[in-house]
Length: 454
Ligand SMILES: Cc1cn([C@H]2C[C@H](O)[C@@H](COP(=O)(O)OP(=O)(O)O[C@H]3O[C@H](CO)[C@@H](O)[C@H](O)[C@H]3O)O2)c(=O)[nH]c1=O
Ligand SMILES: C[C@@H](CO)CCNc1ncnc2nc[nH]c12
Image (tube, rainbow, N blue to C red; front, side, top):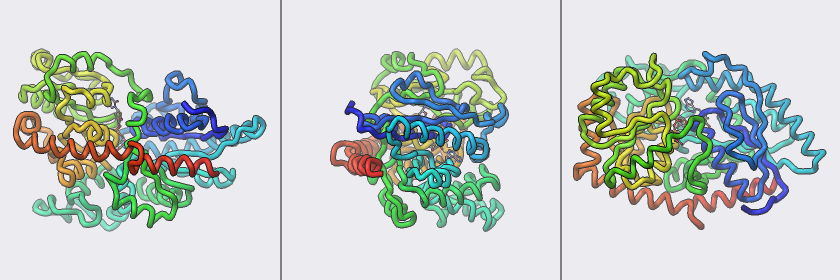
């Protein structure tokens, strides 16, 4: 680690796993460049301070009730958090600025997620530069501001007949019409003003950091972002590569996964995980279970506690089936995902295509089977299956026969081999980006200069 440069940055992650990990990756990078780190965080989904002894942690109350904290509607959750965190965050930051003045350590800026919409006016009033992070694929961030308009223009299921479903959605390529419908189905009115505020406060910020993307994955959208927002835009990712082995998991990692993988053959295992927020129904659990079993390939499957609606864990799987599953596979509550994807035995990833999972899979050259559920996942899945052609798309069919078919196709058939070769090339391209003189690396250098210049 380099020695301190005398500057402190204040980080304020959005408290969902998919946003916490990238923020801590950024923290590690900046700390290695000599910045001191203060993390302000909500009580809800609080990061484990003991995993990061070198940073200062300040907790603020978030006013969420238990019911609110467990909602599946992420947009609703985020708007509630924005409402209740504004005043405690203001108090916390004001106090922090005052004490740093006394201690004569300069706070150079606030770095928080684009999803926090009250921080820009606050930073303004405190005369503190604010940089914004975003954890989507750049093309989703840039494109997704049309979504509220689409619902206003009554882009409703009724208008899309069956034959139209597979046509491209001109308003938001490379989505298909049915993808847009699925996105709109998952959102409510709350989105409209929230989304607009994200755009306005991002444009007013001192810079936008895409923590998990780079020119190689998002060139056009990055040019568009620079043109549309007229602020400095950085694409420094996939940033987990700089410091592998994430220590910001909210759940306890099941370390036995790796020993189990060690016993499997090269490229034979299908890894199955749907990230940290998506839930599934009992029927879907059973279809996946049968599909995996019938594929006769080894599998490592993450089922989070509470992930199956109305169930504690996997008790809905009948004992007899469970016995048969155990012959071939392993079910865990939380996996060391990056290590799993890196393992020589892992041959494919059945994923919901959260952007972090998608990028982690790309970096390790693991081809995917896409089962996107909501929001940006649908766009990520289209890039994987239709644009980069490094995966197969389930097209929403969570059915045992389909799952069996695609798993076998990816792991055992020549089609799968072609996909794997293409994925290898993409992995190499992205890998070069974060190495010295790669595009992400250079963007990171510019970011460090930018922060040091405040
Ligand atoms: C299930 C599981 C996950 N993980 C890690 C891998 C990823 O870094 C992270 C999950 O991030 P994602 O794959 O992006 O998924 P998720 O938690 O759903 O993320 C949310 O935030 C993402 C980024 O904004 C969005 O792209 C997703 O649509 C959204 O749902 O957690 C593990 O390390 N072990 C696990 O067992
Ligand atoms: C602006 C973004 C991140 O910079 C807020 C995160 N927002 C979200 N993150 C994940 N899933 C979502 N579903 C709806 N909104 C979501």
